Structures are given as structure tokens and as C-alpha cells.
Image 1 (tube, helix red, strand yellow):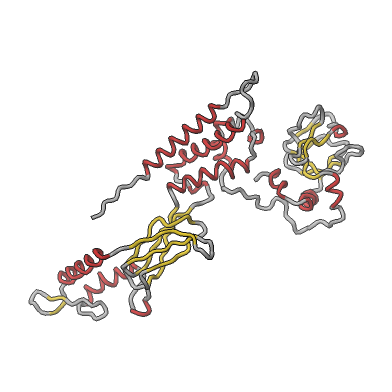
Image 2 (cartoon, one colour):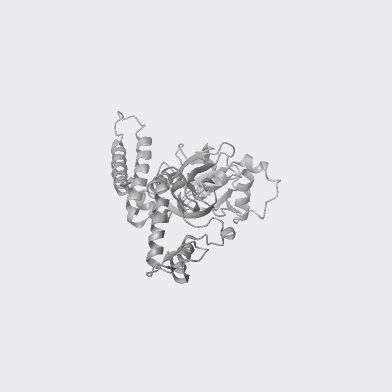
Length: 378
């Protein structure tokens, strides 16, 4: 969010405090140099905007004084200012009218307020990435500020949807485990997740304290596959009894492994696991409900998204840029094509929309093919 967008989200008092705490800069009858991003108070007697708070949108200097006596406000909501013939100046935007600023003069400045503290966009993305996404609409030949949409609007309404589309096809996976002492489970989907990519049960004890067995699946493998063969198969803790080559009870790895293979085969044959995602009727939160005929440690691979553009896989980065570009082209093309096409000199922006359709179709086709899977069940 740029300075102008940030200021527009502030209350009138916060706008005044921003001016006071950022140097209390003023525009007077002798001012000839204006710095980009600085919030000024106009101190210009007899001017209609005298006392207003005005933001400098771009660095401006002139050997002659600006005629603030002729400056007028065209639209308060947009902050448009004109010096002559109702032509909007590209250098200044009104932030607070003289009347609204005077109404809060008696309110003391909040010195603990920090202007522009941590301005946040909905997506963490570098300016270099934005420039590449906007290349087909003319940036940087055209300044971003000259586009119909602000930087914040482009990020929130065009780049963010493209990023969410990417994670729909290539979600970030975060695996978490949950003890499962019964055959059913009910888990709330985490806030940063849109569902479960995979749910399965790893054999092991769900309550290691009760059975003196390890709950971690890796430790269970170590316990059963390694220790059981090393310490003897007639260990009551493991429950395996085999016969040696002489036909008597003893430690036989071959017998133990065959016995375990049969047991595991029966377990796998009878194994069933299913889950579904629903909205909880009381909390309104998304839950996954399911069951498994095999108990152990429930492992859930949560499918998550991210608001950081850097989380896009490098191999898919160019495709994600193209998808974001398509959304920008479509938004700007649809907006500009609202002008009557029969007016002489009007530019036809249908090429923006057709180019957007082509980019989006190509990217989604690649992603659909890449994520296609085949499943064979016996």
C-alpha cells in the first residue's frame, strides 16, 4: 500500500497527526521545491485551500511560484486539485480539507502514533516482480501511478487471485500427526489451510504410556523391525514367537518376518479409511470428519496457501506471472473498452482481453496436465 492509499485509510485525526509527526512541512508564498511523498499544510492567505493538508505525489520544482491562489478542489473523495481550466494536477492530492483540519485543531497530537507504520499489502511481492507482471500494460514505460488502478488495488484484486489459483494446483503441504485411539476422527482445518491433501494412518500406538510402545512411526519401525529380531522373538512385549531350524521355539528371523507379513497382509486387506470436509454447524469452522479401521497415528497433509510471492516454485514462476498479467490485462481492458468505440480516435482494447484469455488458457492447460494423476487399485 503506497502513501496515498495508506493516508486514505486514516481518520482525520490520524491524517493531522501524520503531518505533525513527519516534520510539519508547510507550503508558503515562497515555496518552489516540493518533495515526493511529503505531506504539506498549505499556509497561503486568501487561497481557497488555505490550511488544507496536501500530499506531493511527485517531486516538483519550478523557477516560478505555483499560483495556489487559483487552486481549487475538483473532488474531495479523489483529492483532485486543479490550478487552471479544471485540469487535474498530477503532482498534488488533497488529503484533508481546511474545514475538517480546523475542526480537530483543539485535539492534541497523539505522539505515540507512528505514521506509515508497516504498510501492508495482501501479498508480499517485490517491485521487480510487479514490473514484470505489468510489462504488457506498458510499465515501466508508463508509470504505475498513471494506470487506472493503484498498486494496492492491482495486488489485492489481480495478483492475489492469481496466487490463490497457483496454490489451488500446487498447494504448500504441511504434515501434522494426531493420536488416534478410536476409529473415528474430527479435526478442525487450520486457518491457513483450505483442506486436507492426504489423510492416512501410520501403525503405532496412539497412547504410548498405556502400552509402553512408541507413538512415533519411525520409532515403531526401529522397535519392531530391529529390536524384535535382535532381542528375541519370544519377547512378550512384541508377541512374536517363531521356530528355529531344529523345529523348536526360538529366534528365527525368517519365521518372524513371514509371520509379520501375513499379519500385515490381513491388516491391509481389511483396512479402510475415508474422510470428508464439512462446515461445523456450531462454530462455522471447516472440519474434516472421517474413520479408519486401523488405529495408530493419524497423519494429515494439510493443503495450505501463502501470501508470499516468493513461495511460488521457481519452475512455475513464469507461468504464475503470466496468469497475474492476464488478470491485469482483463481488468484494464474491460475498463477502457467501456468508452464508446464509435468515437473517432478511440482505441480498441479488445486485444487486451483476447491476450488475457490466451495467457490464462495456456497457463491453466499446463497446470492441469502437470497435476494429472492415475490411480490403480487392486
